[in-house]
Length: 172
Image 1: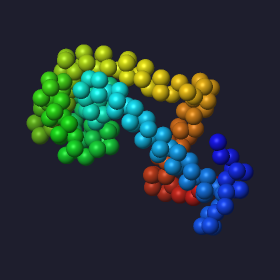
Image 2 (image 1 turned 180 degrees about the vertical axis):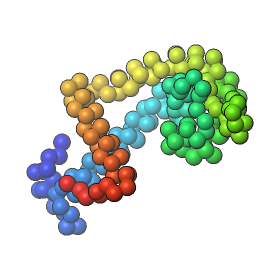
Image 3 (image 1 turned 90 degrees about the vertical axis):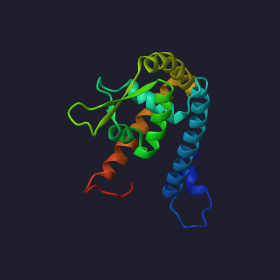
């Protein structure tokens, strides 16, 4: 692992500070780890003939309140456009896993919900998917995994704070 002291010893022809070089390395490692984890997650859900975006939709709908989610709510949760979401919902609906339900108070609004078949599938998938994630991260000792979780929470909170109006965008 590259410490701040080690980062200071790396020759840098760009004139970047050791802190900046370390931040860039962390960014690249996070991105690489995310890509590797997503590759593993794709393999995990392919057992059920699902794509990762389809699984993500089903997982969100499995956690949804009783009335389900609107397209806008679901697209905000999944960080995808409504256009991309429409195609995914179309395929899941054709498989009998999701249904569209018009909002009684405003028929312009449609809610998505899992069908009983979709609920049964998710009841099967979620525990096995969780085991896959646990297995993937089993290379990290539990105490370090807790530390990583805390650090990533700190990073997430700091990044959310930067999104708020009037927040400071200065680095440490």
